[in-house]
Length: 278
Length: 336
Image (cartoon, rainbow over all chains, first blue to last red; front, side, top):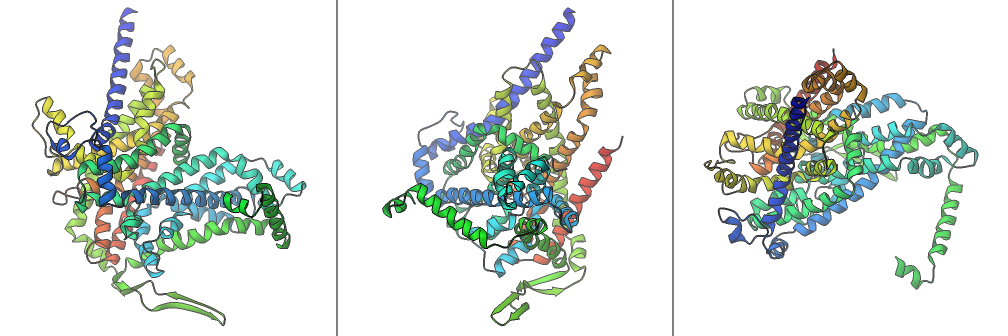
């Protein structure tokens, strides 16, 4: 019995040590980013490095703003991701509702065609989309970044699965009360799907927020860059130093991290919903 | 908006009423649709965009892979002339048919094989480490005795929200020769390592970065899987005298199998698609030691002279491999 208790104590100790070490490991890069963002250039380069924050954050921010269009990129990214998310949620839930609650010809083949594209890696589309965008003159525009991804197969699949759970009797009684089909969609179906819509919105927002290869190919003018494209160019441009790049990284990461802390439940359900696609 | 409406003397509710009246009038003029027609109206915006920007490009990539790209098209593919309505669809690209030329070129292309090797190498090391860590963390966070679960879970999952390129730039300075990692090593008496300049260590840096970003993500999925395992199974195993390892081996693993399989497939595909991390952290170097397949496709298509036909052929092969991997993993893990 005593031996068992000792063994339990050792196990607990090991578990705690492991979890704490991993937690620290996850925090180190973020902490280091914030420290580096606050150091003036000469302190940044010294070895051994300074391990606690300095006071040069706003100086670095000013240099970053003067030398690059990075602050505009933040606005571009937010604008693109928000517009994309709203439109795509609407499109996906409309179509998902139709697939869940209506009968129409070719319903099954259309749905399975959409489903089959789920396994395709999106990099596949970059080359043809680049050619199409060049041909219709959409290169270097936000609509070229937003529109092609609006029809998101994960979105339609999620919304169809969840909208199936809306009781038919509810829709039927709304029809009896004289509601049109579209009113049924946005007065009954959409509000009933609030938590799925939130999860989908997070999936779509993060998808667009992290999109890199495609905007890298499509966007040319640095005033149109999204955050990932702008950041990837900072190092090569040699107009700013690493401490200023870390200011840029902080600006890209910290607001999203705060959003994650506030909306953790929705993030988690978004991740799990996205993972249900198999 | 608000100032505008006030200046005209409209109150908000009046505006709202007006909007409703207009809407009602518009609705009244619309023809009554049957339910099937409503369904078509509901799916058409999605399906039109899906067809133009997803389905067509997929087919077009395969088509393109049999051609050599000569430049952007200037001819007309077809036009529709209906008097007042004139629609002209331009030719997308100027192409020359070369049959399987692009595919046979791949066989003798050293850099393609190098990219395949690099990607596989990173994959084979990274995925098991990450899944192992994620599983261990999920089990630890699922343990009844652990306090402050929420804090640990949040901290470990936080990288999920990190922008791909932003976190990659952090790893560049962390693993710099005078960076924090070498400083840590120096404190325990290890010589500084050229993380980004040696072939061996550059790959390890990429592995570390990807693992940092995605471990928490996989942990969340595995944790949800663990929580669906019925507690009675563990109790029954305990009555049978099972120890910790046996409970893991005979209860947790079999019960978690589908979730685990899913996570492995997802991570394998994710790492196979690697692009941003090597692009930012190592630029594919040193001497192409970390160039990945997607990065090679990007270079062929968009850096220097655009070999879009060849890049399309590479893409077709890449997608075929991704599909085979996921089907094989599902087949292998599915039986029993």
